[in-house]
Amino acid sequence: MFEKNTLNKSEQKTNSDSGEDLSLNKVSFGDKKLEYYFDIIKYPVVLTVVVNIVYFLIRKSFDIMWVFDIVAFIYIAYIIVKKKQGKITDAFIACGISGLFMGFFIAVFKFIYFRKFYLFFNIISEPFLTFIVGGFIGVAFAYIALKKFKKNKKEISSTKKGGE
Image (tube, rainbow, N blue to C red):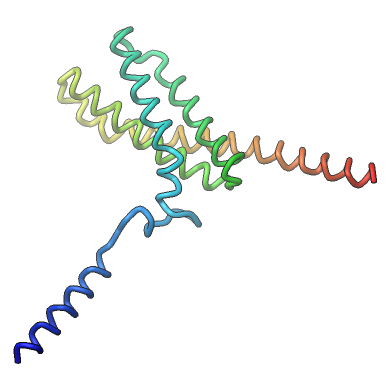
């Protein structure tokens, strides 16, 4: 009788472990895992948020904050297209996720720094806005880069065929 109880407990333990594991390696967007996107965006997002906050503390304004964000989105799309050989959807997802994080962290900073209640609603709206902007910039850059990349491949292959 004692052996039966231990057997059931061990079966329950293995069943509960396999059912609820949602790590970055198991969740996927598109055809890539979430871990793939986080590996690409973590350093540009942290750097951009730090630059935005330092710029604000020096200048006391968020006037050109979007310039830093746009540079980060273009850099992320460049990494996706050139180094990882990704597609337009990969650039959209990576830039969109990075926009969510950048917008969220900047909105939380504004809420803490200014201590105004209406900025609480900014915590919802700013990540959504930067998601849209990031996704659009990622798609635009990836589209232009992939067209140019394909054009360069065609030129290289035509010169090899003609030269032989």
